[in-house]
Length: 188
Image (cartoon, rainbow, N blue to C red; front, side, top):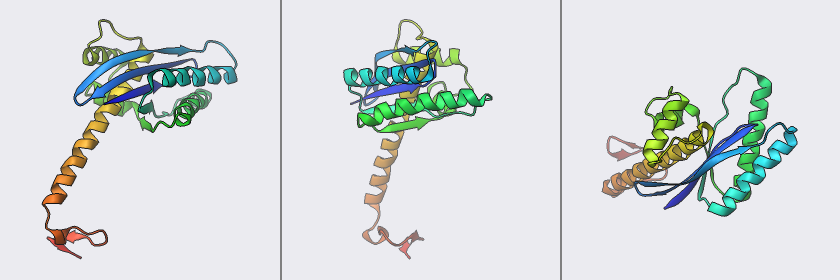
């Protein structure tokens, strides 16, 4: 069982979504937005940091997932987004959480099945997957989608690792080595 905090960073609105995953069951815990308004940048960053630190203390997540930065047309916007991401990551790192990053395309692919999905499609699928009675606000839906993407990726990696262990255990002893390479059934 793992609690995952997903974050959609922004210099004005930072979305967050918290889910609990146990096997194939996913449970919605909380979501929302940290709104910082028209403050100077240092105050915005402090509010984001403190808001996430409060959520981490309250929900005690095991994992932290955040959207990777994308190239914006406006360099100033990209820098501000990078700063918001930075304080979010530091908030998680200060709490000892492992940080996982996913591109917007990966998140949309994992949740909607299409890497070019729009925000309304993401909202709809998040609502459907988590069994919510109404669509979450767009930034909160994106954060929940990031958490769901991480849950999906973690489960996929765990299945692959289990399959690899099973495959390795079925190999003859001579095929398993830490220094050689296996080719044609022989170690070289």
